[in-house]
Image (cartoon, rainbow, N blue to C red):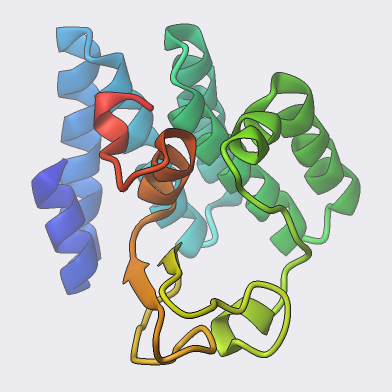
Length: 184
């Protein structure tokens, strides 16, 4: 997995494909379902970028099923989010709504909200620090955006840490910056 992520970040997509496929195969053989689910989801996203939507959906669905089977709420939620994103991007709004409803019914969103997360409409407000989500003096936020600078979320006296969606979800559940691979 580590090599696959490194290749993906470096833009070596063919190598990332090979490493994710190998990770899926090795994890399945070793019974490492958490690694298998994560590798499947990441591989799905790469297929999606190639416009191989059916393969992407199938891989992400497998990831979701494995994550649910092992009770990993973070991985299951991430796979469900990917599936909803695929649906939204393709204009399948009813499917996207259904995936969001499924997340609500399974308790993923409720777990995050109980931990203090705020669910809002998509928008630029928090990133720009212009309305909802703007930080106050001394407040700390985790952000899944791709860049950071002093005052990024509206206040130069706040702290913003960048992280993956997985780390953001696990951290929301634990109340501290957490490694999602260790369970939330």
